[in-house]
Image 1 (cartoon, rainbow, N blue to C red):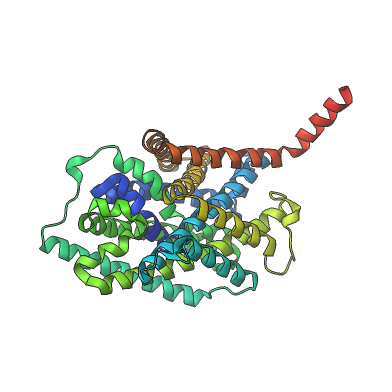
Image 2: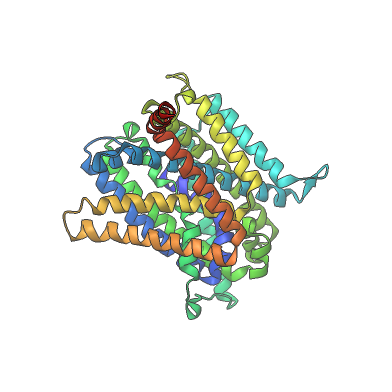
Amino acid sequence: MAVGGMVGGGIFAALGVVAITADTLAWLAFVVAGVIALCAGYSFVRLNGLVDGHAGPMTYVERFTGNTTLAGMLGWTFIIGYVGTMALYSYSFGGYFADLVGVESLFGVPLRPLITLAAIAVFVGLNTAGAHASGRSEEVLVGLKVLILLVFGVGGIYYGFANGELSSGLSNVGAGPVIAAGVAFVAFEGWELLLFDQESIANPEKTVRNAIYVSIVGATLLYVLVAIVTTNLVPPATIQQQPDTALAIAARPFFGAAGFVLISVAALFSTGSALNATLFSAARLSKKMVADDFLPNQLRGDADGEPIRPLLVVGVLTAGLAVLGSLNAISSFASLSFIVIFGSISALAVTQRESVLTTVVPAVGAIGAGAAATALLYHLFTSEFDTFVVVCALAIGVIAVELLYFERDRIEREVNSAEQRL
């Protein structure tokens, strides 16, 4: 489940954007992001153990800060982050589909956004009707995705080595990998879903801990392999022009047209299943947050049925971002959301330190997340100002809505008091 949540869509959707920023050092960007994610994973696991229960991340914040507003804002950030990742998955789904069929438009309308909207509508409909993939089918699908990427990676390494086309890029190390690590964070989203579903896991404390560590390390190694192949076999100009399908293009030199088709089909299954799983998880999280008064009561549905209202709201938000946003803006916004989450939980874990290990590891996660966020925003400000404006506007809008919701009672009291004075 954890590996599927990450490998399911992140690498297919985000690799091109990471490669544009870091070029042949994209692999190092994934290492940097992976280390920070691993430190965050340790922090989540430690806090989960300290609460002695099957609680989720919002409980950690509420328990160790005593601040319900901060806990609720973290929950909102999770939801918004999932909206961003689902927008990225659906955007990539549309791009791979359009490239695979070789059609750019339909009746004068670009095909990519049409397929993107159709995919979101289909998966919202399926989840509303209660159709979810079984655990066994998810395991099979994840196994196939990982196998295809391993074959791609090993085949690409062999081809590149045989033709002298491999380069580590270490001779040109600069700020690129750190900046790209900020964008790459969206590819490490997924393992934290385990913490929201501990009630259904046997021996959750041990199982969740092991699953988080193994999935982050395994996904990082797989990303490194895929990034080395893609950035060495695909010209930078091609990645710049087609970042959303760079992975499939990289398969052409050594597997030919069949490789392009295979990777494209794998990408469709991967981004589609990741969209479906994340949509379901986001809706279930929303339902829990409504019950805890972290979300408006208007989103409350049938207590025993599917969370239809949250599904529809999350689906509409995802569709709007996927159709109106650019690939870079979507990936940057989604990554920034999870940088904030990972960094915040790591910082919270530092406050509960009891030894050198419980101090250093969370501190690396918190400082690393802060550095990645700063580097990403600086890069957008200096090189892609339009994207910077969009990302900041989205972030400010989300924070404003969160504060208005959680401080609504105090604001109402102050308004009433002001009216009485008048």
